[in-house]
Length: 494
Image 1 (tube, helix red, strand yellow):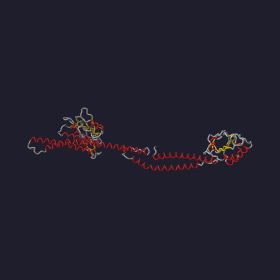
Image 2: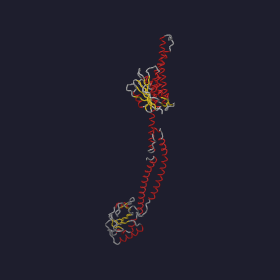
Image 3: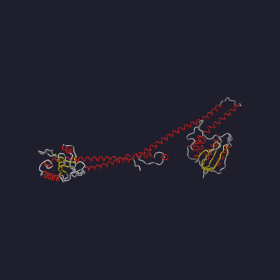
Image 4: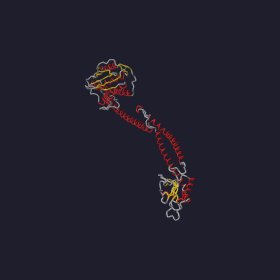
């Protein structure tokens, strides 16, 4: 499971501070050991010189001349003194070439018979301490030491040798057997590091709390349907980034939708202007033609002309009225998502009454009922809206069908659906209009470009919206013999 950003940041800081603390502890421990070794070697710097001055006869019997009984006595005196002062040191007598000539201790302990003289020369030349020399007992690491050169003896042709004293034991334990002075300091460093980490973690949690709140706020923005289930995976920064990207995407989508809607509104206004311009222009021209007062009212030709102009003006006025009414109805239907005036009524009777209304209209083409009577079919909804949808379908079929053909209307029941179908023998629906009806897409959003300009398809758009408000749909049906067959589907009551 992904930890929070504060926890991850605290963990990273913990790792960094822990690494830094270990480095500082190692450096402190290393420096403390170095200072301790330097101090030990500095304190014992003059030890070898003191012994050489007190017992110069130590190199007797080591190949440098002198009586043989002097060296054992001197060695015993030196060992007695060292047992009191520091029993951990090891004392060696070296010749001029660094070879171990004698060891003041148990025989057989020397494993490396030759000692490197370079550290000894630097020690005698007051070089920087600490200096480490060869371990005659075979150790691989250098050892702290004190050294001094024996004074030359009169008549000795060879250069004098050296007194070589190893001060520490293997494993880094000093000759004084003291606990390293850095131990307590390391404990203090560890405690200080722990306290620092605790304070840093607390400060991080407090500092990142506003970030966590902002991430939760941004994650909760936007509609739940668009956002889906709230995602809490990832730390605060990842959630904030994901929420910001989602919000940017939603804003971009909304901006695109607003631009598209503005373009559709412009197209709609242009279509309305086009549809209204033609009948209004014609109506204005007819009214102007009816206006001159010098026309003889008793002239039969003038009266006939005025009657034709009057009939044409009424026809254009009817177009304007019908278009205005359809626009108002469509706008009203699109402004709601529910049917307010809902009642239960017989759909078979409504279809018969609507067809009879058109049968009384002398205007061709005619309208008739077709198909088998389905019997009693009831639906629940707005009777006026359903009648308006059916009227629009029949009127559209009459206006676009063949002049001498008959519009046929039928009703059938398919399961829980009532299907009202209307067909004509016209040229058929435009391809885009037919495709949208097949997909159940709105006929008005976006508007369909009309070849001759204008709106077009308002009656079908109203019928489609009425069907959707009642839980149904408007779809085209195949018609092999040509023309158009549209089906208005509504769910039956009960």
